[in-house]
View 1 (cartoon, rainbow, N blue to C red):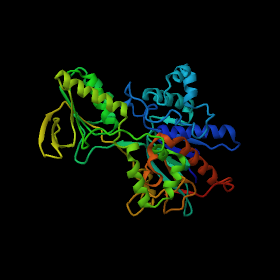
View 2: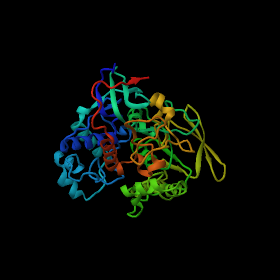
View 3: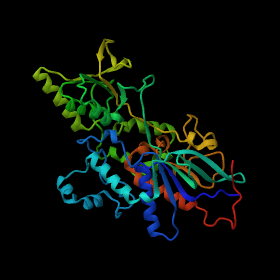
View 4: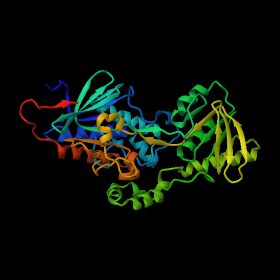
Length: 432
């Protein structure tokens, strides 16, 4: 007998910006079409949150406000950043600011504003425990999604929006004095009364530069040592032609390209996103270094062309020059690794279907153009990925730039593949 569980066209795992954008696309679709697409999302956080540990007051977005949750898909949407500004009474002020790049805290507030408008389709504080395929003969007809609150949702399609995981170098273990930059603001609050003397920041990208700048400002009695293998911070390439790598059409071109071309494109345009820093921030850090040299008190120290050769749990860092081999030992109150993120592997959550997700010769998941996983088992619906598709769809896989367009494509795929009418009576299915 079929289990008495609610059946949804889509169950979304995670509710970050990508699945929030999908929830909005669903709301707009259902408002304008006769046949609604039903959906529910499960989010383990108690409320909406996006990189809260890096919501530095002075940090700005690195993408245009027009690349919000909806505009690239539906410029007339009521969920746009401009409509948020109008509702907040800041539209005129923002226009007068003459700036395409809002404060990061402001964009996060926009996300929260949008999330509140669709909070009827999300369960916060609820983690997905397991996914079990439900079979109709040899075909997977549904997915049973069991949640931490004991409930089970039955899905025709899954959309995995499990986000990114902080990445530490191999051999490095997080601890009281060693942590990833994603924890920055939480850690800073705890350090305010401790009178720290030295920080070591590892990394050469935007986050590393932001961490170094914030710690230098917040702790005027402390030394901040930035360690990176490059000669200096490199500016992000946000020039008009280079930015075409983020265009929706670029996804089609990248997907169709052979592996050698894909590899070449990633090497060519990595500086648009990876280990790259806004030029204004580079200039500001250089001003600080130069000013301190003039004053004779150097608190911001750059160990370039270097690496942390040894790091102890007590915060002792041995910095090695890559050119001379010279070593410098630094005793730090905190060692902050701004070493990026990695996409979460969705397959462990998929239970018995996980090993049946097909992979390429490099061990990477095979993904269709509509972001559906390719599986051995015939699946009536689909398992869609929001992120973790950089190897197939290009650099925008985990970025905001193409989110609005991507969710529109996923929704259209679900609609096109939806079974219009199920067999009369009770479907003979089994969860096995």
